[in-house]
Length: 92
Image (cartoon, rainbow, N blue to C red; front, side):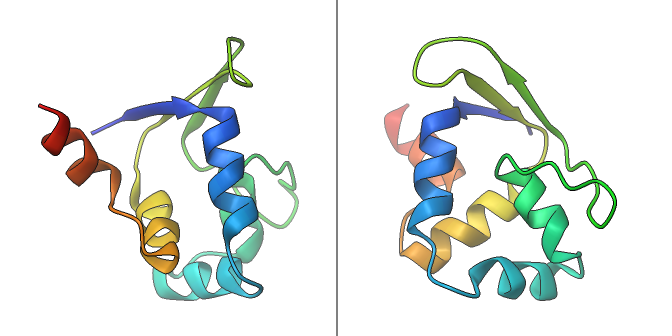
């Protein structure tokens, strides 16, 4: 299930993560830390991989379509926020 959020919201989540969170998420999902950083807007494709995000110009930094919200949900769990699927279900 793909989801769409603003680029600024994605960066807010990334910037709110405590030190070491990128490495923790990477270890839990058996990914390289740079792949997790790329998910949040980084661009190190020598060490990391593309991870299914698509950025379109628009308001609030643009729109980001995320193919798989697993990394985002791990980040939100670290921050104590609801996963996006729960937020979307409660808005319906």
